[in-house]
Length: 238
Image (tube, rainbow, N blue to C red; front, top):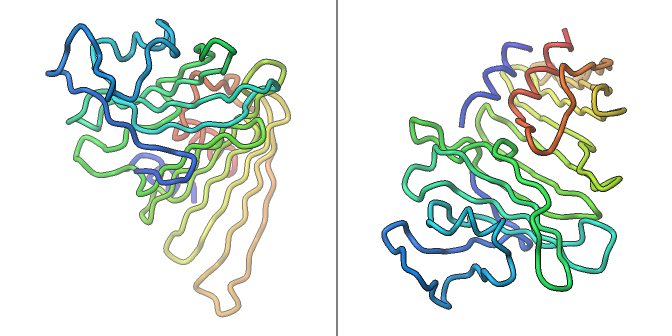
């Protein structure tokens, strides 16, 4: 089963959700001193620390999710920025913006939490991508009909930090379907529940196992990489 999962995490999505909106911005060839009003980004509200990603139009806003992440009454945002417009195998940047009375300020950014949309062979990593803010949590849901399976993970806003709340991976293989659910106890340790359904048998029996996991390094929003994380926890499920 280990070998199957390593293959799942290495291949290659797109999103739809009422809370997630596609944006259109200028191409790199359209640089100019004044940004037209038709461009979605409002530089006066986002602030210079955020628009530094957009000032040369090297990034486009691919997805935006809005909701209440921290404990105030101002709406917060998650922005997914795609580097470049033609080569979608390039990395993406995820920005967390906390709402303030005067606008938004940059809270966190990650170059790893969203995988490239396409691999270098121009195949999608996931067929569907969804990003949302729900009950003080950022929820990222990635789904593929192929071997990459269904990946979902949540980061909870707690103690003025984003902490991994739960990670789920579901994979359909030849003869069995396997689900992994990881729940952290702290930043370094957690519990992994593995459930396997044996689809080749008539009554499709299931087996469940539980593992105590100790991570090599703390899990943080800034450097979270789902494929590396998945490989690490699966290695301890032998």
